[in-house]
Image 1 (cartoon, rainbow, N blue to C red):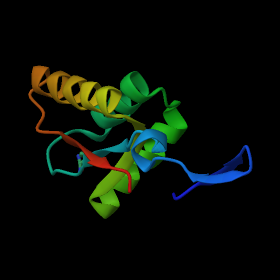
Image 2: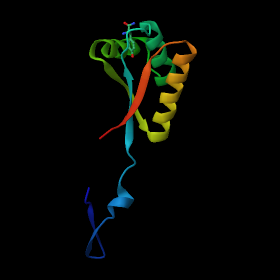
Image 3: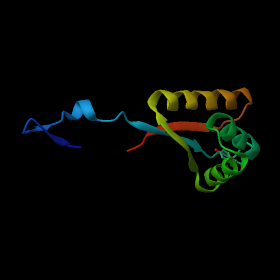
Image 4: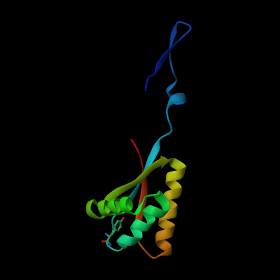
Length: 104
Ligand code: TYC
């Protein structure tokens, strides 16, 4: 993003390192054969603010396609969501996998 701007008649190239937006991260759920569908729907409602209908759509996408997106967040928020989901799943003895990935 080589943004230029004109100031006092001079064309200046803004410093990339200073204008680049912080990267965002996708939080993804991965399919497995053991975690109950209802539990995944509850996770999507509880940690990602989805209503039951949307949560069911996302859960079914993960179930059918192997992976699905829960949302896009800053690094710290994404990391916290991943931890919360994994912790909640383990408390209930489910192997549910949740990962984050930079949103290119
Ligand atoms: N495949 C699971 C089942 O049939 C359901 C499931 C959906 C598991 C999404 C994980 O991220 C997941 N019970």
